[in-house]
Length: 312
Picture 1 (spheres, rainbow, N blue to C red):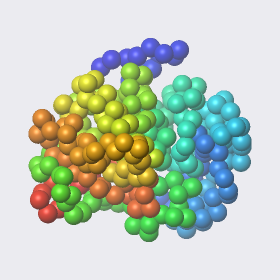
Picture 2 (cartoon, rainbow, N blue to C red):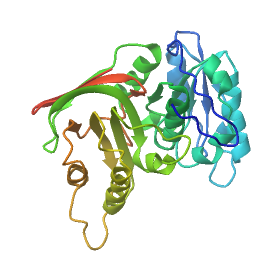
Picture 3 (spheres, rainbow, N blue to C red):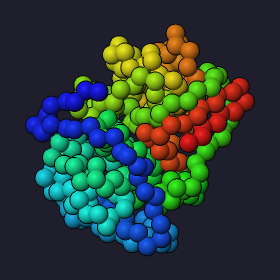
């Protein structure tokens, strides 16, 4: 196992025990490690309280610095406060946007290794997911965030509750025409494709070998999706996977001269010489039905002609 040197030496401490699930009466913190909030999170707070949780709000929830929820130091300090507070059992990012990569190296995760807790979010929060898994072998929840809750499907919110409270998670859905059948198991890693590329070569990048990779993205051009995946391929990241799960690729744009391939066509073209199972339209990403998945956890992936099954 490699240790990387940044300004502070990171020690790799595998957890002796899994992160404790939530129970009624537990405290959950909301912080904004990236973009600032446009309005209060009334719906989200009410929902978390309805699950029997006590909600604690960070200073970043009302902070503003350009497009960010406070400057990098404030956002790092807010996250640090909740990592170091043993009474907080889970930390949920209020929203994504952009900014985690600017502040993550200011955060000390030492207390996290002594007292691990669930971290929840998606999109820009991918940087935190990859960092925690790579350096501390920690599982985390890729799922709905407070800003998305007013538009979220009931199912996606129910899966977030299940993930936090330790209920069984599994998904079955109809097969996409571009799927590649097969069965495999491996540790689930991934998140937002743009952020996976952004952390490559850094202390937050994970080892792709033997993993099942999940990817999603929003607002990209077809050619940038192609370029990012080819970057990962050329770096040797896609050849040794156990499986590929493709979530939502929403609001994808094209140029005046059409690219000529859809997202599924781009992806299958890039992974055509490998033989692991591939599935499309997994219900996660920048979509209302953004169902929760547990990154860093062993999953079973079964892709058949008619249906796909993912079991945690």
